[in-house]
Image 1 (cartoon, rainbow, N blue to C red):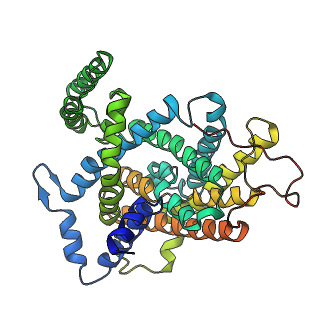
Image 2: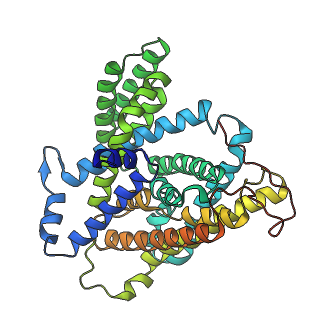
Image 3: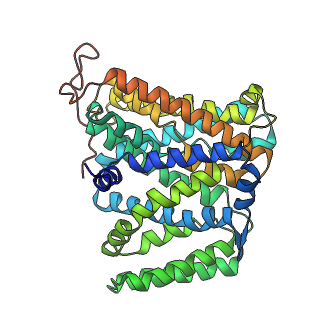
Length: 393
């Protein structure tokens, strides 16, 4: 097979984006702890017009990531895996519990220090790119229904994260800029209702919306989600197809490279038991699995939602993978604390919790699954009949 064919197959695989993100993040750690460290940190703070490099990545490029997130949420709610209440029940229950339990566990560990309270939302979200990349590496060992369930939980998770960012991490508001953003958003909505389906009309309006949201004090990435909600579905579908490769193979790796780099100089193993990194790591590793797996088990046992079409051991492995909070956790950590020692501790906690969750989830799924599983709920684990998760489009 030619190199070109190998690259084409790799890009088409569901694991590709997550693998590229992992590599970029690993390179950031290497750069931050090598003779290249001064150049690495200097590069992140080079002024490019009104923003520095780091801000262009986190505030501008990540707005495109949130635009794609918003388009995916809209597609799933209007005609996909979240289109009906029966389809929403289990993912919503699992996602809400999977956000609440980690937040409470974080507060139990780190909440004694008032300076750390703002970090409660850091372990709330799941990094679907990483999680699906690991599932993709397992291939047919993981039931397709489990991948669909994790994806749907992550979509609901993203909704919660967007709401948290908008409400909990908004600075003092510039009401004039906010009013201007509302006018632009209304303009886009009216164009949608009037039947305008030209992408070139919506793009400049989306850029203007981003600028006004940036000036308003609301985090600029919210503009991406807001724009997605008012762009017509046909236009949004074309835009999502156009942006997906750029987000997966450029924007998210750039974000990982810009945000995962933490210098470990002068830090000993004791940093792992400091309240902030320990709270984040435990919340991701323990809080996520308890929240996600526990809520799914209770929902199935009480009849609130159908049981997943998978072994309970496989559902547990999926819940462990939900503890990979990398991208969104780092993003919220940057909003919660100013650049400095606390953000370095955030990175250590996120990396520790995410890595252990990833390894544990991968090993559990690998040891409890077989290729092309045909009996997802064997009698040895439960005598109850298997019911499929109602997450199909």
